[in-house]
Image (cartoon, rainbow, N blue to C red; front, side, top):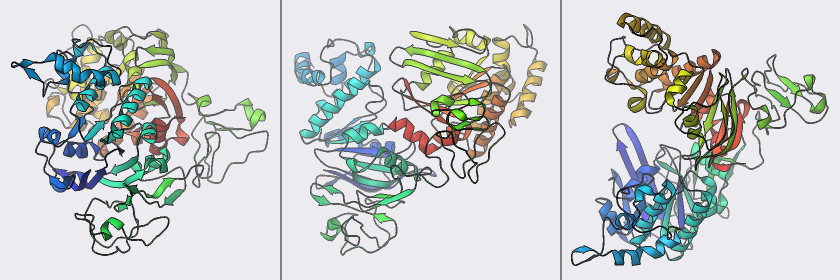
Length: 637
């Protein structure tokens, strides 16, 4: 058994872990969940020996250990498959599998022994048909990920940590991997499974631990007792679309109840700072049996523990968990219903059942464009059957349309549209396919099927240069690597696209003209810089504004935004959001991807959710929150 308790880690003023911990039991799959920045990666790095915690303890079996590095972790039986693969593309399969510890004969690598050891696992993972001398660089990403998992399992570890192991796998490969995980846990291996695919967690995991802000908010809950909605709520810390539900349960690990968890911040793996109370369905005042038994470590207590509001035992879900089928006051129960307290957005069409008189609900602010349809007798004949029927309700004519677009191993028969004056979000987990839509529109990849239409009526651009000429702008997430030329001035960056690709300003661009253009955009976007300042010297927020300005100067019709506010502070983010809305108000088509779901909910008119290369769901503005987005991305329909 591996037990991590009271782990803390700070990087300067940022707290990555604040008393986090978990318990890995032989023969179980333990899922570790949390939003980006919750502390999952840091906790995994501590267990892998890559990061030394500021405080806390890792115990393997009955012995406390200090993991001095990844090699030390391997010697203690911990194998890690990280999200960033560490294979060597120029080496073949066998060489990659045994790169750290290869069997030798007469001082040379014994390939026959390597093959003997590796072949059963390769077959088990569906890689047995690949010649062993195949360079790994010739394999697709999914097979490389399976090969990385194979390498981890070759050392017969007692603990296997899988960090997003299925992010690049197709459904068949996921099932194959899950079967392997079940077989190795059947042999007594403990598996820590880190994933954003919550439906996979529900199907595979035995127990679930959820982090938020570096702390345990759910600890060792049996996976069968948590719905996906409850997982989402625990990750976010709120349930804006449903009544809060408090539920207590008793977690059992190897026949014993364990630990204490406070879903509002305290952790069963952090030393209690005051009296606490263990809560269970059967015995609300019961003491923690592990603590009562005198177990050593931070979880121990000499006597039955006392009251502390909000503290619950492992296996307990705290207030804020969504109750299935319940709706909060003032929240619409379905896309067709406008509830008290919900403001209807302009041009939204709302259907409410059959032909009956419909009155505005208390607190509903209806603009002149809102039509409330009552079955077939709706005013003007307008009605919707659900969220998908109102696709593109806001804005003007359709500016961008994809119909049945497929890209090898990335998109499958994707159809969507975005109207002039509309901000449409594209969301999904890593590898879901939403970013591939940008690559198609930007001329980076060619679809294998389907059609694409831009505002000028033409088909997809064949190159990025053609995309720019046809007024498609792309603001990338990596502003320093892809969005800006750091050794040039603000003026040179702002005018480079409009002049080089569009020849605005004539064949020769005069320095005075570049400064004039730059000053206009500096004033409009409130960039704290002069035209002749090197971009490298600007703050991150001002650099991002320059990245926006260079595309605005090119007068685009379509604006593609990939994480447009990544790494900027709250004030700059608000300004960037205003710029995005202004672009839409000027008649641009804006498509936006972001890892910040709250940002998508705030800025977008609607969000199209992708899953494994397909459009899974569409959320309209009236039902668009961080909570509903996270649920749609993970749960599906």
